[in-house]
Length: 201
Image (cartoon, rainbow, N blue to C red; front, side, top):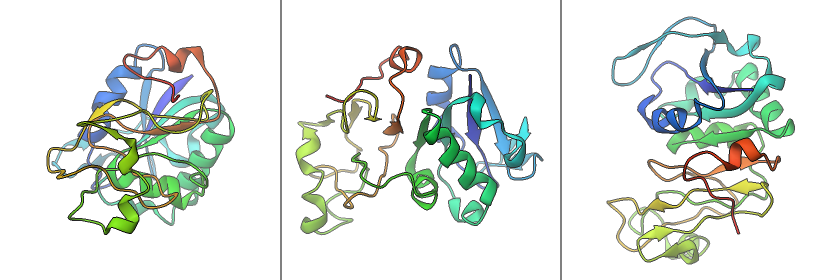
């Protein structure tokens, strides 16, 4: 099993690097880009690809990391959407960080999932925040989602710019900066054992 970073031109690679470092020992990390060519992330770093989206063998993917940046650039990419759907269907973890979560939504894998995001009181109205404000305990977000590996999250510090707590957009999934929320249909010992990951209660 491998970890695949779903990279694209203008992505913010650093958003997934900590997660990649956490999983690399158990699930080696490789990079896929739309056509298998190198891409340049938003900071100007040139990222070499191991695969094109179409050449990813999704049966071998245990963890999929999708960075933010400009996911609109791959919104219409059928290969990217199929990777996400296949990884989730096969029981792998698909994790979107920041705007990378939009790719999970576009692929249709977020229906019924509950996780947190980093919007603040200033960003969204109270009727939206009421969905996830209860997820906060002091300045930390509780793990969220369903038990037995259906949807997991990490304990994470509240976003520094947050005034009162995290917000929520119904069933839409957004992740906190840094550690991320993720979804999986598999209760995997390998995935449970990764660093500070915690299965939702």
